[in-house]
Length: 413
Ligand SMILES: *Cc1c(COP(=O)(O)O)cnc(C)c1O
Image (cartoon, rainbow, N blue to C red):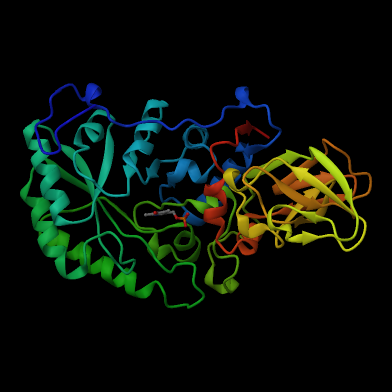
């Protein structure tokens, strides 16, 4: 809808004020190309179970920003809601609206901050904003007063991330501002850990001390938040002093342990018998096979040159689907259960694989780009950690990069 930048809202019905648009993802029913992602919902439930062991009785609020780390937030939220998760956190108002419209009844916390002018959406869809500073508290209070509404809010303090959240020295003024407005019902106090996956054993001490100091300052202002929270996946698995009143796992729900590379004494809360299971498989088919002779090249720039008879498979998935161009010459995929290297540069819609070593390879063989494959030549798996290492990034970016062109299929087992 159109609206003058600083003018009054022209419509008073919050439903009509909705300005959130929904980008549309490729649907399974539309799919022609064999490229797809498969989400294993049973593994998601398993991972929630592992986290429950680590968190004890502390409620779990699943972090489902970026479309549920690329898995499709609606399906993930529905699965976790049925499995008994206690709340959901997203980054954007739009993401919260999407989940509410999909029928999710859990509390939904919008962590990215209150951007202003979205008070109608927060109210209408019962979303909880995180206020990061005094100015946000004031502008939300003004908007609420204009409509004679109240709202439950969480306040965020900066304990070392240096991004959002009120700086330690400004906490008293922030608390006073929230306290001043009876329309702001402060339910939560939160922070976010910047270094909980680092090998240094002392990384949590400073954030914990700053959080305790901030809580004392809120109490001194007469505010008693009942939902205090700071733990991401790494914090949950590492130290129960970070658990407080609820925990916010993201990555670990999707099968990646962010502490896999730190010494095991730093992750005492990972149950020894329990492993996180990967939740996303990405696969396609071989659509073309050719046998190259010495000197023949593959792909843009002729980066791969055969030095003898070489069989190259073309697979219809490229960087526009979320396979980083960095994988050219570095990455591996699975064909018939065998690991094979990428050949040549990744194109927008295609990659080449050197399948010379794959006995019996043929057109329409399944290719697994991420996840496990059981084939006649063996069983192997490409993990988000590996793909991240080959492409110079982290598993978070690997999962959230699988683009809208790739339809997600959901499997219960
Ligand atoms: C992404 C995020 C989380 C979850 O972090 P993981 O490392 O994926 O578990 C928790 N809290 C905030 C504020 C986040 O942005």
